[in-house]
Length: 115
Image (cartoon, rainbow, N blue to C red):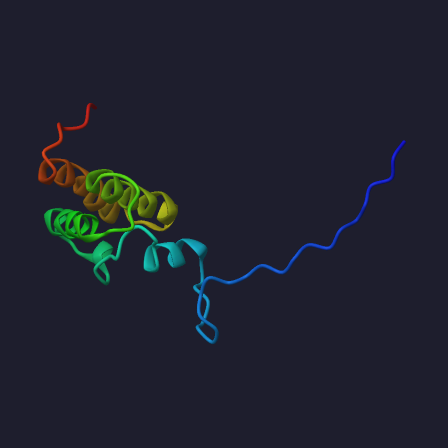
């Protein structure tokens, strides 16, 4: 039988600048400081799905840091936001964001989702 070695772990380095207040949630940090997209401020609080889709599409097209095509980056950010908001989204807000997916597909010339 061999003895297990105990090694001390290294302290984690923070991605945020020194002195900046940490986000309340890691998902908030991702939404605000994504490495893929620079989102318009409060884009997910807009009430028009077409406006949200246009903003996401514009952000994705302008980004030089994204790893996939603009449509996939924009849809990924939208889906990420919906999934992370979870039960905290009202049913009306969820409907608006789900309709945004259809508007984003239209704006990017993609076929509608199969239901």
